[in-house]
Length: 301
Image (cartoon, rainbow, N blue to C red; front, side, top):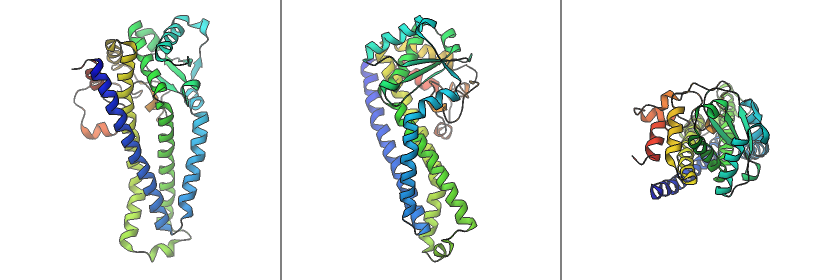
């Protein structure tokens, strides 16, 4: 089992970086398409500046934004000593500083981690998770979230989400401008029609492609965190058992599209991920891998 998990973790690291590289190509493609369509290289420079600015905001404030959207409340050590001891013990094993701990008042079992690096990390757990899982299952979920922190998944996901949002906003703005006119409309009419058609297609397709890449990266990080979490606890069955219980849970009340990818399992439609029969197209638009696939990997089936 250990060798299988190590191999799976290494494989997902390689695939994740490949996907991230493809994502950067998409970003560059949008810049080229807009620059060509409008005959203005400054568009590319503006997009880069906006991207850097938004990423700086996300880097420093992503954790507080996610916690606020989820209505998470900070938990002091004396309020839940057992929970703190579990987290502290796993952090010692993983060689990580103890993150801040928040609790979300929601009966649906779930959790997420956020923060720009291990020294500024936070984990949030729902009351349903604390009530429904036994100790080994809770340790599995927490180890999974700590793995996200150790692997810098929280930072990677923040950057990707910001870039996807930026691409969508820019593409939408310039698509509307292209159809309804703008100061460069005459210049566009005189361009090579084939190249102009290609640039327009790139602007339209880029947001969809970027979103699919974001979701693919999210799914790969979940597999990687499952493998790393199981190695941390040395008990994959605990994490598998937690997934089984979560698979039949109700949606989380305060879940948002902007934070859905952060959660341990899909906070919207956990039941849909329980099935073994998930089509390839449906998987493309999922923030998390199907739960049964995650369980089979943990149990080496």
